[in-house]
Structure formats: C-alpha cells, structure tokens
Image (cartoon, rainbow, N blue to C red; front, side, top):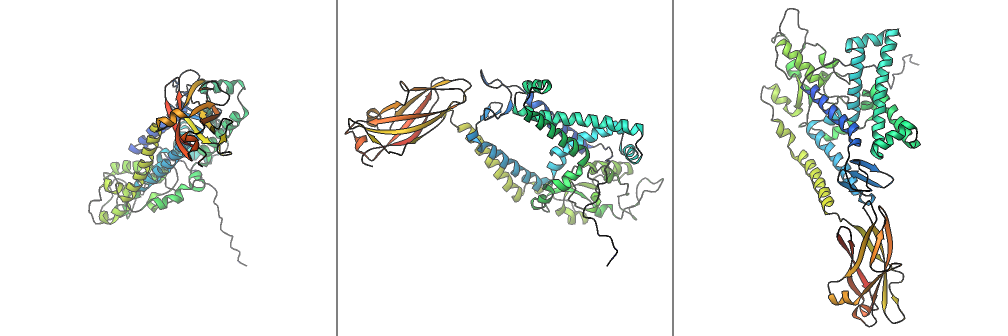
Length: 482
C-alpha cells in the first residue's frame, strides 16, 4: 500500500489582501458603487403622489394589497407577465453584455462585488494598505489587533444592518416600518429578514468574498458558452511582455533586445481581488474588474513603456498583434451577428412590454356565460341567459361602474334587457382595491329573433362613472335554436 497522502479536494482559503490602486477603471468602479448603493439605500424613501387612499412610496412591493408600485406604474397580480418579461430581459441582457464585453456584470455591478468593494474600502481605512494588513494578519492577537478588528467588524456590521434594513423598506412604507422596527412593533418576519440579510452580507462581503464567486456562483461556468474569440475581455499581451525580467537598479526600462516589457513587479497580482495572476491566461476566477490594467499601466508609465501590456482585448486579434498589425476596431467585435441577435431579442421584449403597458385597459373585468343551463325559459316564454362578471376596482377609493349591453345590430341591442342580480338599476359600486363578482341576466322577449336564433353576438360594457373610462367584452346570447 502506498504511503502517499491522498490529495485534498478542497484547499483552505488563503486570505487575499489587494493593494490600493488608482486609475480610470478603479474610478469607474467607485462611480458605479456610489450610484448602485445610492439607489438601493435611498429609493425606498422617495415619495410619489398617487392621490388619496393610495401609498405615496415611489417603489413599493405591497404584499398586503397584492400590487407593485413603480412611480406612476401599478402592476397587479394578474399582470405578472410584466415581471416575467423584465426577468427575461435581465437574462438576455446578461447574455448580451457577456458575449460582447465578458464578465462586466461580475466586475462592476454584481452585488457581491459592490459590497465586497465597500467592505474592503472600510478594511483599508481601518487597518491600512496591503502590507499593513498582511503584517496584522500574521501577528498574534495583540491589543492593537483586537482594537482594529473590533472597529472594522463594527463598521461592517453597521453596513450589513443597513443593507438588510433597506431591503425590507421596499415591502412597506419606509418611515412607518422604520419606526416600528425601532420601537419593537414590527412583525417578526421583518426582524427575521433583516437578521438574515445582515448575517449573509457580513459573512459574504467580509469573509467569503472571492469564494462566493468561485464556488457559489454558477455564472463563471456558464459564461464560457456566452464568450468566443470576438469577446472583449482582459488579457495579457504575452508576445510583448515575455520574456519577463526584473528591472535592474539604475535602469530606466528593460532592454528590449533581451527581455519583454514585463518586469515581473507583481503589481497586477497584488491588486487583484481574486488573487490570480492574469499573466497565466484566462481563468475561471477572473471577474474582469480591470484593476490589473490600472496597476500595469501605472508601472508602464514609470519605466517609459507604452500602456496596454494588460488590457481589454479580443483573443481573435492575438495573431494580428503578434505580427505587428493593428487589431480589429472594437466596435466590430461588439456589433457582430451573435450580439445583434441578443440585442434584437432583448429590445423586442422591451418594446412588447412598453406596448402592453400603454395599451392595457384602465378597467379590469371579464365576463363568462353560465353554461349550466345554457338558457332558461321564463313563464312568459322569454329566454334568459346568465353571465358571471368579475370587476376589479384599481382605485384607492370605492367607485361606481355602469353596466350596459350593445350589439352591432341596433335591433338586437334594443330587444334585449339587462339586469343585475341583487342590484337596483344598472350601476354597481366596487370597494377600493377589491374585485366584485356580479351575476348579470340578459332576457330576450318570447318569439324575438334573439330568442329563436341559435346564438347572437353581443357586447357587455363597463363604464367608470368617476373617470368616464369604458371597456367592453365580447360574448354571446344563446337562444332556442341552439
């Protein structure tokens, strides 16, 4: 039996301490971080006047009222296709951007990336840059280390608490819920949600970090199907940088006759939040955050070499660049058949959703004939059909609705009589935010063409007495001929 120890399937995590870097991509990430977190934390507090009796929170997922409010748009449960459409658009958008620009979502706007960036900013502010954090991690538990750790963890916990708190504010009136949370009057589910999100944010952004991207997130494995040789991604120009070598003391730049432009300074590795070396080629762990580009460009400036040793590029251009030719223009990589198909599908769904939103009826109702029996013969020989109507009041207060009957043939409309079960007249009042189920009776006089025909096409109209909006539904009147 061999005495060789079996290989480990899982290696213990080695903490990563990225060095601070500045540059155009790092500045872009700061801007995106400020915008995305600003929207997330501030949006629940934005107000939007919808009139009396309606919530004034601009963005609100009202579970109790079974509605979703987004500024002037109101989505009801039966209109869930809007939400489904947005989710499909989000998926296609992810395919589109990945196909064109690689993992830009992971590197710039993924919540895990955004909150990890924020946590690392706090960590750097409390404990110092890379070297200071390395020394602190390696030393024993001194009073200084305990103090710095407690300060850092406290700030992390406050950010995580704000993250969980902001999430629940999207499901109830934010000022009211905040007061209830602080006074202990909120529902248990609110406290549980805040606690779970606080714990996960604290753990994922503070401790797990890159392991969430590598082990928990499926996207690194899916992205391979979305990318090809035309995809713009981060790569190292090995044909320009190799053979790499240290810059000797007193030299201003490497000798181009003996070595490449890479001086093996490890700047690209030291700034990487994933702890990888981009010079080793494309790797599953790379989130294309472009911090290695900023670090390498800074070094190239110092040694007097052109920028772009590490850069966004398409692998298809490698052969041309090796031969000294100019690479293909970026727009040709982005606007190609594959990305245009994704964009067409994405835009088509968006246009369809906008059209559906603009064309949807202001009154929500449907009507269906009662089939058992199809018709009833009254004592005077008249024929009566019964219909069941469901009418939803989308307003914040009770509203009256008038029910009427029409037909393309004026004689038909004049010969039929419409009555409402349990109602006097042709008007019903529907309470605010409720659905009324109402039976409707339509009677044709004995011997009339409608009573003797198999079926007659009719329309049932509903008019909102407050707004004068009118909608109709087509149905049929069944006579003895059927």
